[in-house]
Length: 187
Image (cartoon, rainbow, N blue to C red; front, side):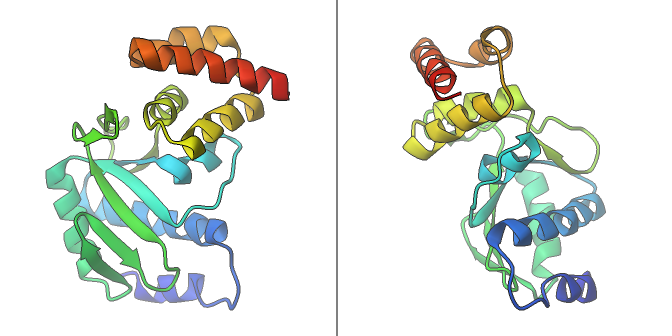
């Protein structure tokens, strides 16, 4: 399918996980377009869209369950991808995992949102949703990502109040405020 293109992209001897991810995303975009489905990049792979590159060994993609099967069927036709179980594939040349996160399924303390694009292909999660997911995950690295996103994008409290807080529970709203204040101290 995209074998020659994949081999060209990953034939260099040395590349970082961030470089590998940035080279793999256009190929995944082509596959989702070929499948005719929208998919949304979340998690660590989405951070680069918002001025923050952090090394991550996977690409988390939100789709519907049915759309995940359509994309998975195409990935299985390509020998550079291998199914590694429970909605996960590994891209062999880069070592990166592709994780399907079906919309509406409980993830930690929240649920994966519906993909925010209707056109076939990969879309990045919008910043308010990404910030909300980082708070809802309740993991230290996600809270660190939230603070870094605030700092690197100089996000004012008004944006958090209007765009992010409506997506959160009352307890998570308190964390959003505490961590926003922490980001201000670090600026």
